[in-house]
Length: 101
Image 1 (cartoon, helix red, strand yellow):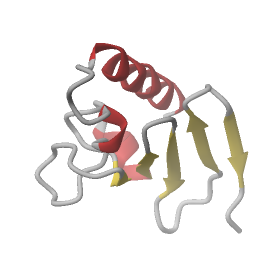
Image 2 (tube, rainbow, N blue to C red):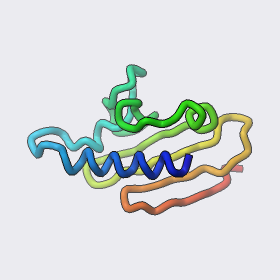
Image 3 (tube, one colour):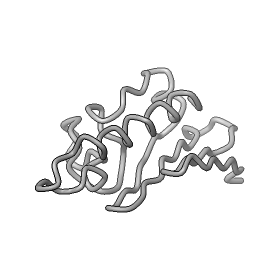
Image 4 (cartoon, rainbow, N blue to C red):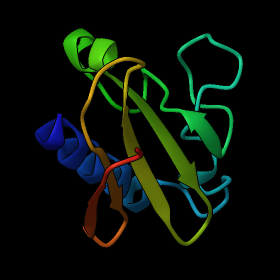
């Protein structure tokens, strides 16, 4: 899960570098608000088309993102009933682990 989040962060940076200046900033469209798998919102569940997160990680963790024009933060929260820490990873590569309990 941690490696997948790090790879996802790299993919988000690649989106920003390859984006046209005429388009909306790609970090505003990282989350899937309507459940179709495409990025259409700045916050919520990470879109399948943005980051390829394995089904085993998606079963064990809820992967969410918050983005704006200058930053993003990925968050992996353990699924209900699983005892594990939550991991956050931001646009600068800073990682934080914390226990929600």
